[in-house]
Image (cartoon, rainbow, N blue to C red):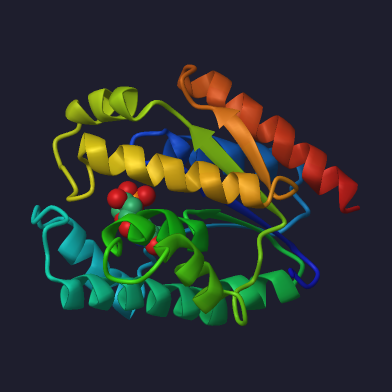
Length: 216
Ligand code: TMP
């Protein structure tokens, strides 16, 4: 649904290396295509809802919060996404930019698809339906596929832990990402995130360049 530009999203569980890859990709792309406007962005954003979310995510209360708190969290992620579209993604695509977003609406379907289990029926599909009328569908989504146990091991070396970094939880999130990828095989591309950072970035670059070239 992008207008003139190209919207590329990076998705995967915590520790899958997509944020590191995003930095490599954006600097390489900018070198290869200096004339093309490139926007590297992320969700949660630095907007109002995003700031509330970041604060909450650094509080280790696990996924044991009440149904109403979990719904509140879902709507904060959605509000942040809506703000992201209105403030940055939509206008940048209109101007013909390549927008790369480190997480996007699929993260909400995958993560809140777990936290809302038992609260709404079939939460992944429920969330997809809420997004469908107003979301901007990415042109390409790279799914950084990694065994959750390896992802967690990688994260143990980090000092700050976010509340969603628990093995069972990450396994369920990973399953949701796989389900989302199977629903839209034309949009999702799997990246083998078990390789080293350079290799992962190279795989991602190859897919992105292919998509960028096909849009010319
Ligand atoms: P980050 O580690 O990629 O910055 O993301 C922060 C955390 O927020 C991560 O654990 C995934 C989670 N998250 C959701 O639960 N739902 C969402 O919609 C998004 C964008 C992130």
